[in-house]
Image (cartoon, rainbow, N blue to C red; front, side, top):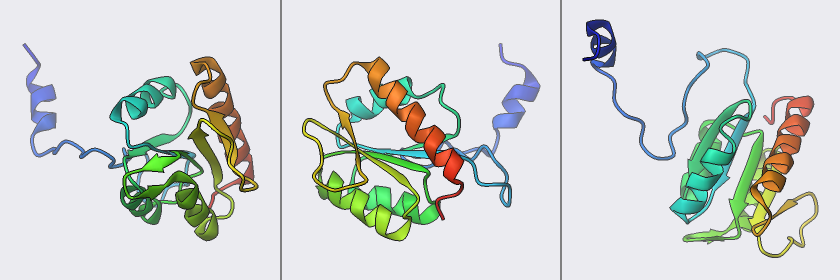
Length: 150
């Protein structure tokens, strides 16, 4: 049986909705590295969630352009990774919108074909998980060395 202290700590807490960020740092604290992953396929998002759980920083997830832009408006991410096809737009268009308002944000398109746009990193959708993980780690290191994307 769970301890009384544990149960009482849960009183009044509401579960986070899908896509809402996990706040592990207090308001006013130094901005930490944040990843935003966007894909219409919940299985792809679940695979990415498992793949990046050991990377430093916060991870947020969205399933469409509208949801992703709302999360970006709430807190500028350090790294954005999106699939190419989304229910309400395309991933490249999303990355271009993010880049327009946050030019220091590292952007990657998780797609079958590389993007034509410059400064957008390509993550091959067919790549082994170890390659995807290594690329995400490098994007995170690069974003952290550049400082806050704001």
